[in-house]
Image (cartoon, rainbow, N blue to C red; front, side, top):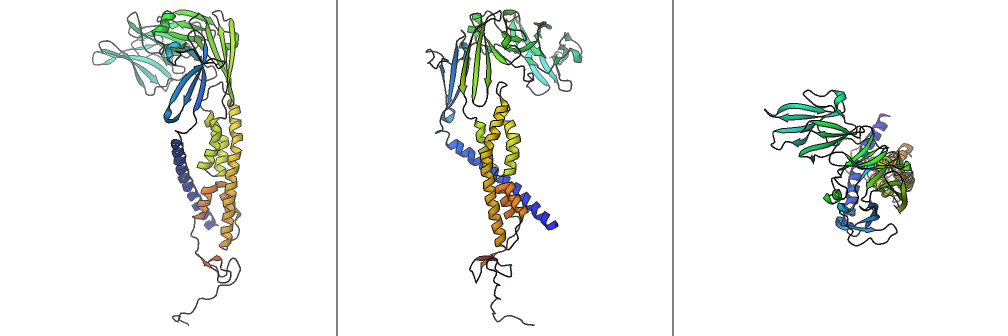
Length: 463
């Protein structure tokens, strides 16, 4: 029994080593083939809806070719060419803000405890943002002369000499900070924290809440839009979405324009754009693995829906469907393919997908697409198990269902582990049937004839 377990343990270790080596070589092979065929690959086409600053929707088509070449064109929703001169520069597109109620709140992405925010003009003082992971809070600290020591702190209640209490700090959950804005010669920040928005002037040591009576869902400073857009909407600086409306703020964090959200846009995820004619556009998605439908809703300041348009695009087969064949090639082991393919791969494939996508249908499609490559791997493993059984019989060994099951489960790596886990005796031709038979057996394993005694050479010693 101990020898049997030792044999299986040795075979399993060799199986793991063979699987790792095969997966490494197979991965390199796939990557090399992908790079070689990149130039001849069919162009990949990606389409999405973009909103012009005047509220006109266009289909932006991005085609990716060999050597990462990219070509961007535009069409109308009915497939007609866009007007000449339309380009992909940000200054012709309406700025917007995405509202996600189903996803977890934005988490401050910078790592580390201290983050430099701004410095005084004479470089005599520096403001830092302090991140306290233990309490999941944030606050500001001021360093300056003399000797670059701490001069004070800044929390929700404003500037103070001591470290802010926990209830006086900004919550890390939902924390977002916009870059300094020049307002009347001073530099202000817009700080978003746990569904609240604050206008923070660190140099003036002043803080005031923005829209204090409303729940802030999302905010987005207009960084990418040049002065051309701000000239159209006077002093536009930030877009804010609350639970009831969508507003445009100026540099002083005062409301420039306000749009009540239509009922069908509330309590769901969408993107809203402010356009130059005094209206707004809400964009929602609904999609699965086959198609994505975009719904555009134009509405006025009172939340009245002016018009609605829908646009659908087929996505074709999800690229994750090919992952089953890649998995079968890189890891040709049925037990691993079944476990990883049905449990891990669908989850990994849907990570990072937007909330409008029906993830359950994608997971079902991926699992359904795994059965063909899994069946091919299982058939290949069964062939290897059959070959192993024949080899054992040729060596005069009895049929071992344990080894057959081992190879059937672990496929090619299992077969290699079984094949090299021990030394196999040499085989010589049988003098009667001329078939190969192991030399450590007293008779031929094929015809059963006894081996003749060795020829006398005259050097034998007889007792």
